[in-house]
Image (tube, rainbow, N blue to C red; front, side, top):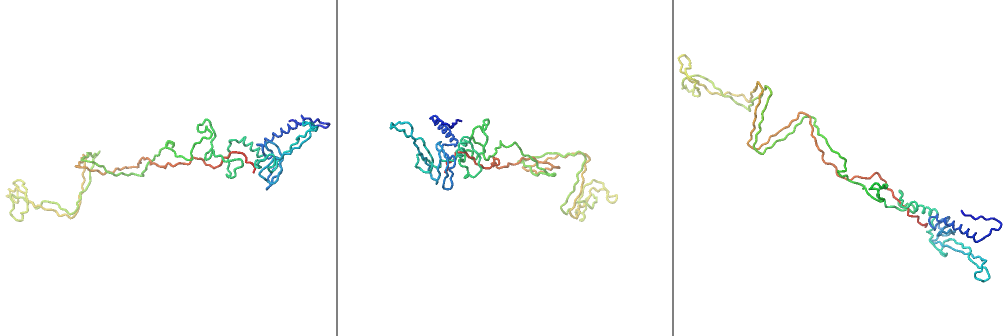
Length: 377
């Protein structure tokens, strides 16, 4: 860092010295760029009610004192020049020339100075520094924000680039994520059949015991059925005859034998059968008898009755059966099962193909971006 060392004993004040001092002043003025702009409040200039305090400002890179007072909309730059007499006589009047040597500039409220600007252009130094830093380091950076929209900090605004989207990190190797700003996905979706896991539905119906199925067979014309009944050993058939009511049986009664028809009236109802010749009648002399005479009679029944019978077979045998029909008919059938069994089945179609929420659990936030600090109003 340059410095000027002064000692007692008559330091020679020369133009070189003055140039050195002015250079140092210019170097100090370059520090004003740290404020982030060429016009800002360096210190003071604080608003207190309707007034503003004194302070120091930077205007277009120049450090100036600020005289405060009642707030006004405009600030003016005043300039006061002080002349000194030089030892040169450029104008030839025999006297030293007067030239401006000291120029004193300051800022205050008003519009009567050499320059005027809006008070709103003045920003605090730290705001200017922050503005420069954010513009340097936060360019195109989006930050999450969870406060109220109306409370977004000064210098920031909503960023709509990600509105309604979940962020994903840039990946140049993934075609879905290899371009910043690329979008994809959906809030909800309906699975296609190809996207469903491979699966099936199976099951059985179960019964707790034997059961049967009833039905009938149908034919459109004449037909017959042939079959045989086989038995592997001796067997018999039992049964009974049934009568539906009162009945009687015929029989022959009052037999006698004679060669001719009796002429008595009491024998007029007799019938006869030829049995040959030379049958003896009563007495050994009656030898020409050739017919048996009898009377037809009927028994008297007491009511409905049955007769039991048993048909026995001493060995294995079978019966052939042929059923013939003269026209279309059907047969009722009953299929019996002596034990438990089951039936396989396929389930019916289920589901309504409704869309499902394709998102993870979420919470809405805002993204904000830096756009610069507004001037102090």
